Image 1 (cartoon, rainbow, N blue to C red):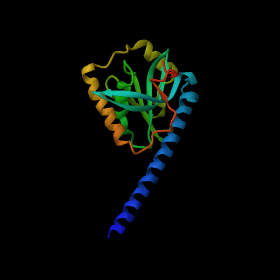
Image 2 (cartoon, one colour):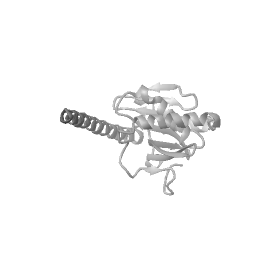
Image 3 (cartoon, helix red, strand yellow):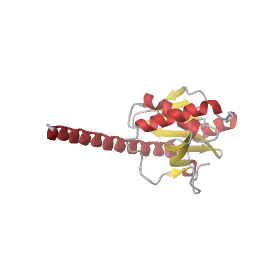
Image 4 (cartoon, helix red, strand yellow):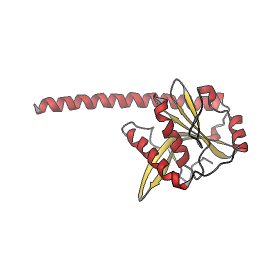
Amino acid sequence: MEDEFVAREKKILSILEQEIADGEEMADAVRAIAEELLLKEKGFAPSDISRNVQFDVQLGSETARSRVDFIVSAGGKNAMVVKCAAGSLSSRERHVVAAARVLASRPLMVAVVMDPMSAVVLDVQTGKVIAEGFDAIPTREQLLTMVSEKEFTPYPAEKLEREKRVLLAFDAIQCCIPQGADGGVSLADPGHTAK
């Protein structure tokens, strides 16, 4: 009986490992699509884009680590965060907005979550969907206009703790899925190129 249980457990673990590998392979493909889109179609320079950005999240006495796939700057200011997913964009909208609100002292303006088929663009201040589709992702010129016309306002401190909890909850749900190769950029790293 115990051998049967062990055999089933090994089979389940094998299936989960394969699903994790497949999900990571697809997420890597989405990252490549996102980077090409930002550079070739949206007009951003390589220096405008920070890749695989890792940052610390302080919640009470605990410190956790989170990450986003890309931070895009315009006019010398971080303005847009991009998170890539293997699918189910609607389930990740809240995650990317929380990341954009938490990762800097002033939240970024635009949050994007994308998969191989589409993208969702969100206003970080309101958390509302602005538009959908790859065409909806702002170009460099559009992001520059947003930065010059819209005030960056700090996210209210009394709400920031909730955003940290939301972010870390989503990170925990995805903890079994690798989120990119080691060696990502850290906001704490002195060589970090994000503005």
